[in-house]
Length: 637
Image 1 (spheres, rainbow, N blue to C red):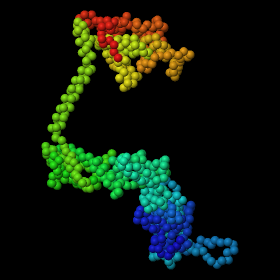
Image 2 (tube, one colour):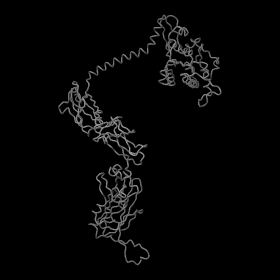
Image 3 (tube, rainbow, N blue to C red):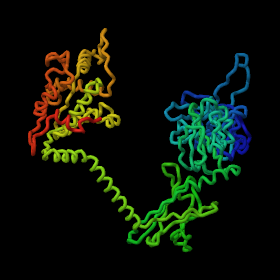
Image 4 (cartoon, helix red, strand yellow):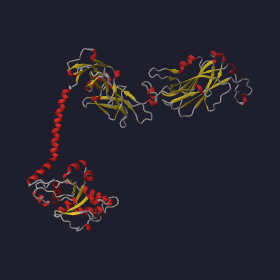
């Protein structure tokens, strides 16, 4: 394409749009534009970097991006390279030959003198692409000093990538290489252009205020199932926080609330910002939410010269304009300008919750006069406040009251935990003397997996008896609350850790059903599943079945380490004899080798095993049978 003058070429090359600051080209395909003095300009792709002998000199390169619109509807990003060249007068004629058919051999016409220029461009991390422009030189029409210009409009099917890093250079003059960045998608996608650029498509959003439900409904045009992504921000410069619901509480919406919407399914996601709550028709509904969400805190302090100061912190959803002033006891602001500080929008900072904060300090004040701050906000009908600093004397009285309450609570807790010990001393005194308690360790008493009232009663009586002998005793039937809180198995492991720290034993109570359960556990398969065969062994449901089974695993592990007898003892009651097991050898394998005691006939032997030292004062100590018959505290739930 040839134009008679450079000024006319500039007019037709670009049309400026002030809305986005990006120029729109008037071309629908790749073209080359030559200025005065050049004609018959053609542009083609070039693979070889060699140029004809009469190649012109490239003096300057100016690359730029335009929006090239096909059929004036769809626009893509295209590259425009403006090249300034200098043509030497002595290299103005060169015959490159005449092409034609055999029938035209007799023609006397000669080929026109031609020249060419080559420019290459490349996107970062890609191979370069070169364009060669050939033209006929008309020296008579050239501008002064043989300088002229050529512009190349280069297009790609999908357009050049947005925000890409580009390099443009002439092959023979690498020092003229130009590096620049393509415009971003957000720069291109202004409201006037987004309908003409396919990649600028973004979902649209509308809002409806439902005052009955106290919420704002978000509506997306053309979306029923898949909703776009949304984030909420206060002020256009604020941080945007993701929002995954289709409604927003009305109390959190203010005039400065904005919504950003984008589609995650698209390969190139464009965000659009909507600030629908600053319109006149909804302003009166959401304006009050600013004042209701304003918070002010004051705090005393000391300056470097040890004079008193009062610092204040104001937090609000939107940046406010107005002033903060100092008052005493909430009686109004002082007239002195020293005690007034202005609120300006450019001095706010946003916190992690999305609200805006402003801080300040009043210096050289008297804290004994109960200083307060008042907030005057532009647009508000009334002042906010007063926000006062409480005198430290009141805090001292408050701390005294809190300290007394803590002391009373601590005394009550100590009495609660020590009342059993006091009760034992009182019982011992009433029975003729004081019994010296020899605490020799911790005892854990585990019930069998079947529930019988007689067995449960005997287990509880044994636990109470051992506790009166000076032991620290934990009985599974007494610890239901802890088991519900921690879980049965964690409770058992906590007791074993206590044994490891303080010493003691675990007493496992046996019954016929317990031994059947143990035998069944012994013959479990490799995966830990019980093998019942053709025989079903029904057992009564018990809350202690899991702890009994867990203890078998621990016994087996201790036996492999050779220390099972150091932590576990077996018990059986005379009132519930074992029918199928008459000796240690007939017990299940996992229980064989553990000490077995029969109660109450072997009570003293059990105490000796546990390490009790007979140290009495006064009449002789009661046996377990006498204790269980004479003590009203022998049965516990």
